[in-house]
Length: 129
Image (cartoon, rainbow, N blue to C red; front, side, top):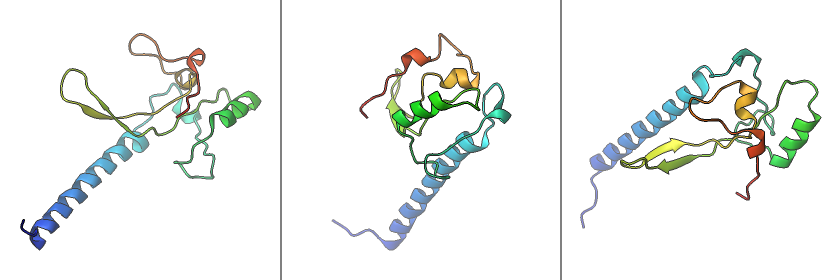
């Protein structure tokens, strides 16, 4: 077995850096910079459970308490970054971003389904994961 040359290691490191950069930029563009597809995006606010930390999750029981005690907002929905998932639709598997949401998420945003129906509040069931 031959040891990798420093040039080969630098090349691989550079390719890894470019790939990571493209992935991060794609995520930031898709999630943070693109305008929201909501009925009134200027009326939306985003709250965090831990100050301004966007990766901190709100416990589902806490969300229910906040939603039920809400007297100021037209609606309150919850989502969190769910990571990546591999999906196969007849061809090779593709990586997709997944985002678990509460049943009232789409009605709160005022976003209709493109096909069939969106999830609704009656679909809300907490999971163990």
